[in-house]
Structure formats: C-alpha cells, structure tokens
Amino acid sequence: MTTTRHQDDTSVLDLDDLLCFAIYSAGHAFNQLYRPLLDGIGLTYPQYLVMVALWKRDDQTVKEIGQRLHLDSSTLTPLLKRLEGLGHISRSRDPSDERQVRLRLTEQGRALREKARAIPSCIGEATGLSPEHLRRLVKEITTTRENILSPGRRDAVADD
Image (tube, rainbow, N blue to C red; front, side, top):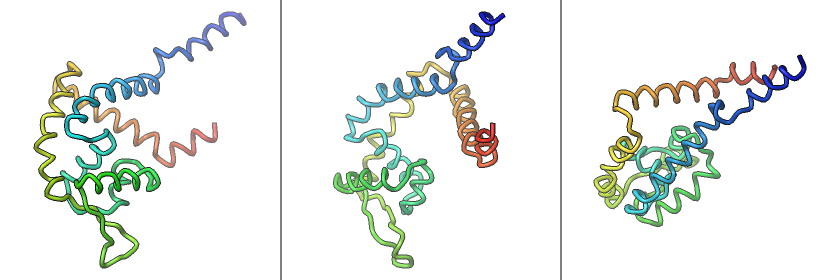
C-alpha cells in the first residue's frame, strides 16, 4: 500500500503534467521565436511589450504601463530609460501631478510600429494554431492568471 501511495505522490510531480511547467517552457520557446524578429527592429521582448501598449494607447503613466504589463517600477524604469535613449519614447512629469511620469511615443516610436506590424502574424503562424484557437488559448491563460492573482484565491491557497 505504501508503495502505491508513493507512486501516486510522484506522479503528481511529473513535469509533463504541470501546467506551470508547460507555460514556463512555452515562454522559453516564445522568447527564442521572438528574438530574431525583435532583433530586426532593435527591441528586446519587454521593450516590445511597452511599445505595443503605447501603440494601442499613447500618453500613459509609468504606473498604467506597469499595471498593464504586470511589472513593478524597479523593473520598468531601466527599460523605459533604454527606450527613451533609443529615441522611441519621451518621459516627462505630469504637469497636473508631478509624482506621475507620462510616457509618449516619439515620431520614431510611432514609425517603428510599421516595422513591427508583421510580428503577430509570424508568431501566429509559428504556433500552427488557428486564429480562433489562439484567441481561446489567450483567454484561458488570461483567466488562469487573473484567478491566480485574485486576492481571495491567494488567501485561500495560503491557508491550505
């Protein structure tokens, strides 16, 4: 009986059955896929995400971008300084609230969007999934992330 229980316990720890490992290893595969595409436009993946957020809606605060990308300011600030150094964005204090730093695309940053336009379709093709399947998968992963980050859910897990 102990042997059977031990085998059951170890099967729970099989990498192939862990959702977190599937997402983690897929993240590595995506990084390898994105690298040459982003090298072609001179961005790292985190820089690309900031630019995508600003291409969607220009003139955001650092806090808004951080919330959108799930990054804290200590991670975001060096990244934003680099984008500013590359000439893609400008950073300035909000005149109505000096505590806030506003991010705006430069003309060069807006022009970069055209060079990046084909990247999502390249990624979509590389996955081998239909657009509908990709949308469902994104929604499922997003829901999973939100469930994990939900304060009530985190508290319940911590109590177990």
